[in-house]
Every structure is written in C-alpha cells, then in structure tokens.
Image (cartoon, rainbow, N blue to C red; front, side, top):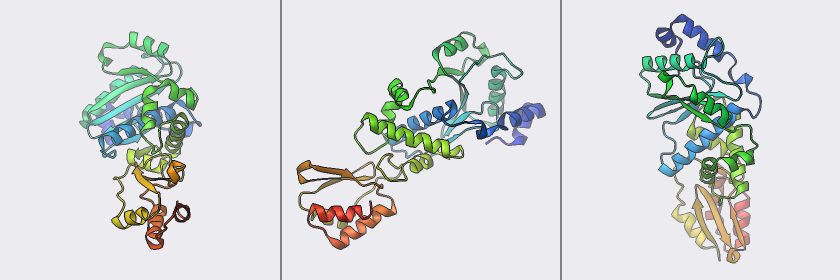
Length: 298
C-alpha cells in the first residue's frame, strides 16, 4: 500500500525506519479476540450492510491491518479514499512516549498528501472517559482526526446489544428473520473470518468466505440468483410447495406452513446447482420427494 521509496520521499529515512519498526509485530501480536480484530469486524459488518442496501456488492472496498505506515492498525479503502484508524485499548495520549500519537497522525497526513490519497483519520479508544480526555486535549492542527470510543472488550451478545448500528447491520447480512441468535451467528462468522484472514481483503471476499459453509447464516455478496424456468416448473409441480429466494438462499414452505426451511448452501454454490439439476431430472410431486432431492445436496 505504501512503498518504502514513497515513505522515504515523504518522511525521510528516519520515517521509513519508524514505519518498519511499527509494522514489525504484524498480526503475530494479536492474541485471539482482541480489540483490533473486533473493531475490524465491526467496521466490516457496517460496510457489508451498506453494500447490500446500495446494491454495490462491495465494489472497490477493501480492508487492511498492520500496514507499513504510521496510522497502521486498521485501514478501509474505497472508491472515494481511505479511512485510517489507530486503535488503543489501554492508555493513550497525544504527546507521551518516544513516538507520540500526534506525530503518527502528522506523519501519516504528510505521507498521504505526498501520495495524493484522499484520507480521513480516527483514533479509537476503549471507553468514553479516554475519548473525552483525548478530545479535550486534542492538538489544534489535528482537529480533523475523529476520536471515538469502542467497547471492544464486551462479549459478543453484550457488544451487539450495546451497539445498535451493529445489530441493525447484522440483521441485514443473512437470509433469516432478524433474531438475537441469528445476529450473534452472523457476527461470529464475520469475526472468525476476519480473524482468520491475512488482514488484506476485499469486502466481497470476506463476506463470501463467511457465507461459504452450510447453515444459511451469512448471505453471499453476489448478484441476485434467478431460478431457471425449468427449475420453476419443476418446483411448481410439487403439491402445496411455496418457494422463493431470500438474499441468494432458497427458502421453502409446505404442508400449510408447518414445514419451512432454508437450503444450507446458497444458490451460487455447486451444491445448490446439483439440487436444481436433480430437481429438473426427477420432477418430484409431493413434499417428501422434494425434500429428499433437496437434502441430497443442500
């Protein structure tokens, strides 16, 4: 993202050495469910919900962490620029230590200006008290840096309950009706996918990886699936069956609403295509025959 030569040209050899030293720990220093990983997953969830609402499918949006630069903990890049986040779950101040936070933001702004990058900056801390103290003492020439608090130390359910924007976003990311347990499942899939990634991923790649397995938990960030006319005719042949596609998952209802379910795998998978192929070939006429064909694949 930032080449050595570019960092050197903008901030000198001392700047490059400092950026390299900051980056040396990388993700190896991130143990389990830590503040930075949780905040990253939170931002990914919000971006995914916005992409689903707009129909953009996440075009041009990517996430990076532990980047070789000065504000390096979490970076969102998109069609209109970058947002660079420095995260501090513990003590934080603008001027303390050998490398003050204020200098990090000044160096990063200098680097982005040299690169012609449209960038915004934020400092993320673990509670409102630290946020308010940092805001009260914020250097005048860093007034554009947003200082925000994020309760990253909470459990999954408490975090979702605390942050209404996260709860709302999670409700939009799966095919099932919004319930507390559903939101928690979606969150854990996104969190685990981001934690297990290499930390440099597009939004669509992350969401699709989270929705890859069975369970109809996370909707894929793919074009809306359309059943073929042959598949629709075969499904219409099943007595009492209602069906529709919800966020690229096949949903069925039968027996007067007593039976309702979701295909485990989304419609763009080989498993679902196998179901459609056999459905057309076998032409089931009752729910039990349909269910056997479905469960053989999805």
